Length: 101
Image (cartoon, rainbow, N blue to C red; front, side, top):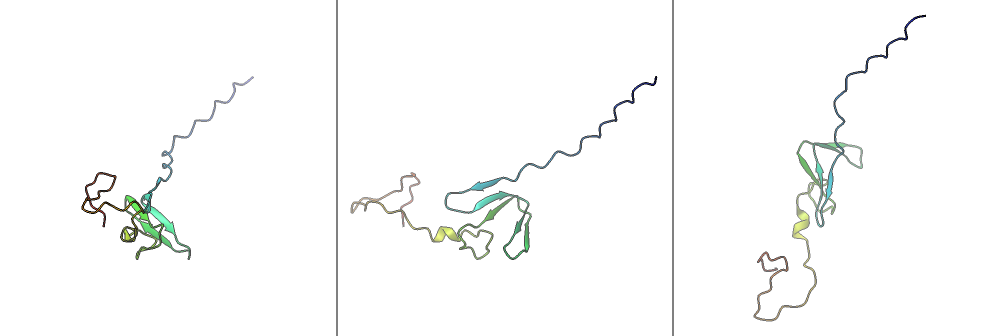
């Protein structure tokens, strides 16, 4: 009788798989995508971005769409609230000390 064949040698481990892409949702702004990233546009073209974080516009106000240029900031409307008492400065509840306006 012959000895059983030895088990085949395992292949050396390859590079670890890349981490899944991370996309952060912001309340009133763009999607923040960890880059570099390729954005596939509706017309089929690919926009390659080498930045470490890419801001993708979600409001479509950007002049650089699909990339955010912070145009959404200029068009934000203040939330309705009670009218301030005349002669009393009104400060936002976040404590920043900035007066609205």
